[in-house]
Length: 192
Image (cartoon, rainbow, N blue to C red):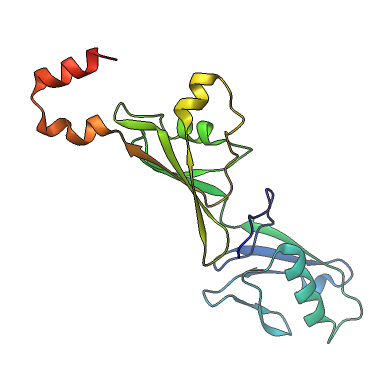
């Protein structure tokens, strides 16, 4: 059974990431590397080492272990230069569907606002939050934003995590609106 991920998961190195390797006591080994599509990097005087999926601390240790074959106790640091920025996606009945960077703590309601807010056709009571729990599992949760706003209680307003997807469903009247005469729609709208 998958478990919920940590709130502050460590970044995992991915193909296409670029970083500098700095050797404190052996600057002749300093180098810039790019993670190849197969997840390997090519290191000066060592060869290929697979690091895709590793966090920066675990990749540092893997590279340190590789260099211990030719250096005594190498002191290595990794400085990421180009990498996949944390993001969330928003789709459905919102003003600007798309992919957005997560620059700081962002809640579901803030994410909806960033993505242009609800359209008139949005079903505020059923915002879906999809979150990857593992490589094979995705957790889906229904968030009733309408109830949160009505009560003025944002306790259920969850923080978004990198890779989350928000989907705002269409309300019932918007689904049948194309089939109703215009006078019926205005009569329905005035009853609320």
